[in-house]
Image (cartoon, helix red, strand yellow):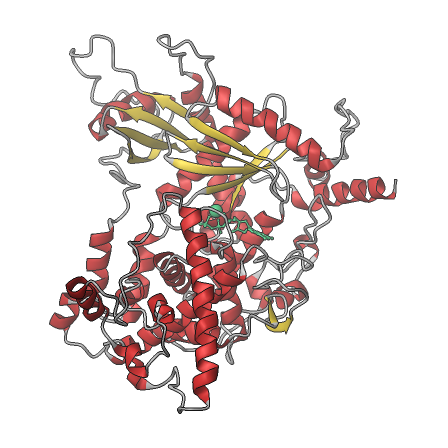
Length: 631
Ligand code: GTP
Ligand code: MG
């Protein structure tokens, strides 16, 4: 009973503080101030999605005909073209109207596809059918009778707007940069999620919300995670949370009106919260699968700590993870968004570190025993908090700056209250380090970090004694009894330590070599490129630890090519023994990762054994020694 009462109280609190409706006014207010806060950013994008439609066309050349046709519903203020590549390229144009009603009028004018037997569904995803008598004269140049038309568009704002820079072009851009600093900036610029990517993600959310709005008028689908927190790259997945408790009564109160006396009759949930959520999700999974245009490959992952439905959206070329519980992830995204806003070095730095981790296989898009992008981002944030001159405030400092309007408590009673007004938080960093210095310091910091005994707290901005035996412990900032990196295995944690050491070594020599002539820089890999060029540049290589003799210091400096040459000419491994059987090609990525993890852990143990036995005999080759460079 107590539980029930507490839950009811939490629901009340949650309704009072967590359900926000966003208006066009809020969106335009945010634009006028330049640097929107999270609520304004999310609200602005949600309204923008409501003003938008996506129309499949035969190519970008259909644009002027589409513009002329669609202008009859209102004034079009922007248009973006993108392609979804399958066997053929599918072309789409996203049109943005000046008002929500105009977009609604365009959607309402839609007709059912008579050629298909499916149930017609109203959604912002449409198809521009060829005009009757296709080969006849085109529509008049401009059939726009709408006097409010603001923008006779002469061109599309983007053509093929979601195409990602291919690896070769990206590397060549980085090669031509003037400094590592500029490489970090360029990487961020060229790989971050662009405006069209964000628009598409908010349209995917709106589609789900609108599909169920008849039965659930208060339902809201909120994007969160890297799609909105400022750390997303082109092609990142969309994390979506669907809530049904949008509470109109609260708004009426705040508008000065008394709460309604007409209460919806409601079916009471009798089973416990989790199994209820699972049942609901099963049901929504079916609905998405059966009816929503564009939604395909629906998978239900209902046993996870936070149950999710995964699906692919074929008109947006987007992977979506839909959850219905645990709003704390949404507020966590707000915290990360704020961290990105506080200092302009935070996002480019995090992008480089995420890219490095991806290049050396520390992260993997599927969940497993390796570090997630989210945990890695927490490591970066903590590093920036604990500097002698911090670049980020602690979360505790944000909590202290909270006002009444910042109170947020989730339905499950998780307190997500922290100051949202950065001016009020009043944090000013005196740190003047460049991005390349910070990157090197990051790797050096985690090379030394005692993951074995210490936990990381972003709330306090300091290390704590580790409360359990997890290999890596990052206190969950919003649920402080939980560990964000609980999934990370000992092997993966060791691998991270090896890789940060390697990265520090490589980067240190790169910083020293940054005086290369411009022509030399363009010809060879340098700076960040060498960090991403794994494993050729690694100073600690796995095969070092499989030798049946002690590691010689000289081994640390030998060229890998030399080794390979030796192996290919003699058929022997570099220690003179017979070459091991050819490497097994694992088809399953996660099996391969696990085998690699086990091997890495064994190597680490061997290395530690060797180091402890050689320490007494020879002076140690310090990792800071200049000689250790791989060049
Ligand atoms: P990518 O999807 O890899 O680009 O990164 P992401 O930041 O979107 O990570 P992910 O999809 O794994 O998680 C989505 C969001 O959920 C994160 O950005 C966090 O805001 C939140 N999140 C993930 N794990 C946790 C957790 O353990 N605790 C809390 N409070 N939030 C989490
Ligand atoms: Mg994500």
